[in-house]
Image (cartoon, rainbow over all chains, first blue to last red):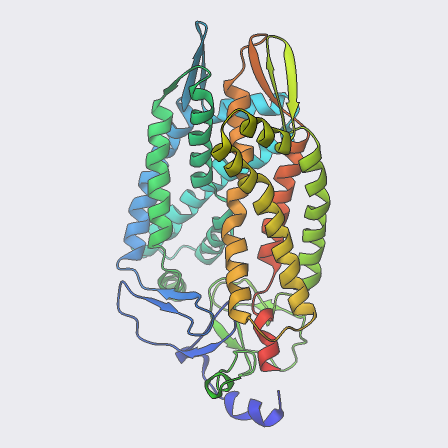
Length: 216
Length: 213
């Protein structure tokens, strides 16, 4: 890059601009109508997604998700019946069995990805969207939302769901498998979290958090 | 390079850098060295022009996952015992069992999900790292798409681990039938976590930087 190229551009005010986070292309910030998304013209990355009432949607979904989180983790997901014996299984129990058989490392990873991270994501989202919706100037919202973004890829409920389905198929011809209330609540929880990630409009959230901080 | 491509300007060329958490654009401070970072005024996260030491971090993580890929595939993943007789299975022997017992499709799915995808993911990251090292100036779009694919697929490799967790807890009928997890499970989980971290630490903008230098 030559110096004469830098000079005129250094005067650009960062406000009206937007950069692609995957290829660093500088773009003029367009006014995006609700329900539309902006893709990087060069690499195709989705840059901005305008969602209507994103904060309110996320608040409702976080509350619903937390309600379903309890039965999804307490009630048995599957029950296996073989020769008169039956084994209930809820997720904490499965992790307990795994950890006791010496596989504590695997049990920890599974616990993080299917219990702790999804729970933290719901709690963080509840706090952020609650405070933004009711305009409560609570400090630390930015940190909460940052952690939400960071944890996002480590919550693996949908992968776990596929794991349940595969175990179901594998065990179906071995013994009688009965699905339980844990599974139904889990499916509900999964649907709500998927909807929540579809509703998150990071741009709107960050702007709202910024405004919220200014009011403090 | 076509005329329209030459007009593309990167944020770094314009003297701007972007916070990767809240996507705020700000001017690069004059005194800032390329590998330094400062705090984002909006969200408080660390901001840098490019992720510091992105290449060496990704290399370290991907090499570690390549090493762990060996025990993950050679050690037994799980042991199915029925009537007191145990049968330790590695991933590959499990696939062969499935194929021998006329479950070609299921065997193929397990082969793709548990062996092919993790291997291709590691190879893909190495390819991206090499392309940055040797400053390839073509196929930027395709390589970005590859990066996106690796990032998306990463979490799905955890599937096997979840299935094992469920099977170990469910099939627990003492002498009649039981399943226990083998040492490969921990190695496999580590491979998945390490490749995910390698992808997160890789700064995809480096693929395009060669266009702007």
